[in-house]
Image (cartoon, rainbow, N blue to C red; front, side):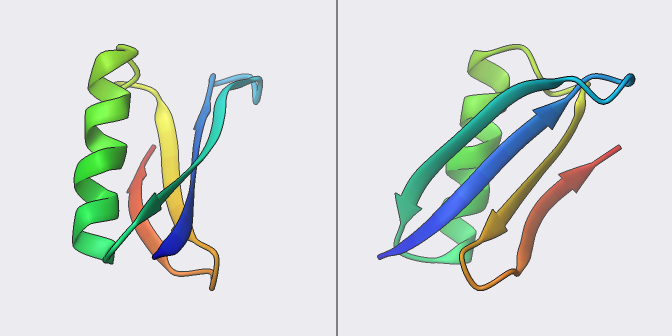
Amino acid sequence: MAIYYLTVFEKNGEKLLDETFEAQSEKEAKEIGQQKLEENNFTNKTHRCTSSSGNLVLFAR
C-alpha cells in the first residue's frame, strides 16, 4: 500500500483540506480522492492528489 496526499485550496491560497490516505494503486487513489472531494463538496475547488513518491494522481485548478 502506498500513501497519497489530498490537498484542496481556496483561490486565495487558503488550505481547505490536507489529508492522507492509503491505496493499492494510483487508479484506486484517484477514485478515493474523487470520492473525498465529492463528500466534502470540493470538486469545484483547486485540488491535487499526489503519491508519496511525488506522482500527480489527480489535479484541477
